[in-house]
Amino acid sequence: MALSQAANLGEKVMGHTGDAITEQNMTNPARDRQKYADPSGATMKALTWNGKNSVKLVECPKPKVIEPTDVIVKVTGSTICGSDLHLLHGAIIELQKGDILGHEFCGVVESTGPEVKNLKAGQRVVASFQIACGNCMYCKQKLSSQCEKTNDNTIENAMYGGRTAGMFGYSHFTGGFAGGQAEFVRVPYGSVNLLPLPDDVPDEQGLYLSDVLCTSWHCVVDTGVKDGDVVAIWGAGPIGQMATEFAFINGASRVILIDGGAGAWRLDFVKSKFPKTETLNFTDLPKGESVTSQLKNMVHGGPDVALECVAGEYAKGWAHYFELLLGAETDTSEIINEMITSVKSFGRCGVTGVYAGFCNHFNIGSLMERGVRLIGNGQAPVHLYWEKLLKYIQEGKIHPLSMLSHRVLIDDMEELYDAYNRREENVQKVGLEVVKISVHPVNIAQVFVATAASAPPASGTPELKRLKA
Image (cartoon, rainbow, N blue to C red; front, side, top):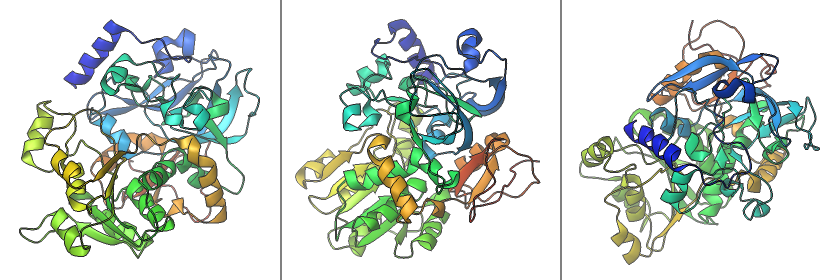
């Protein structure tokens, strides 16, 4: 928390670099009602960051078009992601109280700026979690997550030697854009960052093109999974689950899924969807055994490929626990070290889980001596994949509904964060809705979060459940 406050102060003192060509630091229309709020005085429900380990559902002004390329989207579906927990925990710097969270959402176009020609009011769309300009060096290659023109944060540039694109609901570190866990969202460069959804793809499937499907696909193909590979995946959450399916689609002969602790139930959940999956519970190892030794027992020489679908903020041992607590590192190297020592010599390790800064005790010796390829997959370039994956949904080649266990109200977002943070059993992926209904107990896997504008549940998807009275 102190680091985030210091980063906010540092950014304020240094100022932005001035590279962005869209409004920065508009994380809530209430920050400047005259400039950002709809002149009608209309309000909306939105989930905001309220300090470390605290979120708050608030009533705030509805956003308005402020730039000619803007689109205002009425949200019909949103969700929660493991990346949102990094914000909850304060692991991502430059959060401010009142920032609207959420980077995955779909909806209908409500209004557009005068330069938006390819979208019209009432059209169903899904937003990419990143905000791209469409014209810079990276955008011309559809590497939208690295857009040069939508984030001019000075600290990110200094830390990384470059910047990511702006991102919805992901702190001022990524440009400061209000997120999608709300009833309305302003989408800059709407013509670029919104994909029309056809009638045969319901929100409960189309929503996940926003992030999880493209991120999982990118993790697999960017790390080079090919025919015959044995793939080990760390983390059985939604990204790990879809990476399992996508690894098989791309030719993997075996997939070994690794998880444990409070998330161990997810191993059985994923195996129930993809029975060929092998599982490894790191909290249930024989005495004297490690994840690496177990993988070497399961596969001669170890897997060909290791995929990191967790993140760097979760310490497994006491040394890293205290170093994270004291600010001696921002991320732990434990999982990456396990991956490096587990794969075959000249094996490939892809990192998709979020790592924010620096880590200690990195096993560079094994990396160099054994020729292991360490690949930072980066924030997935959604625009490179979402049209292809949309077609795969239509053709039945991929199955995003296999993640979905719950449909909840935006009214219950505070409770949802708590359940997701505790990895409550069967909470994998969620969708949001805003309606009123009776109370049911929580067992969440993947969630669809609905709003007042949401359509009724699509065939074969969960009915609404309340998380509070």
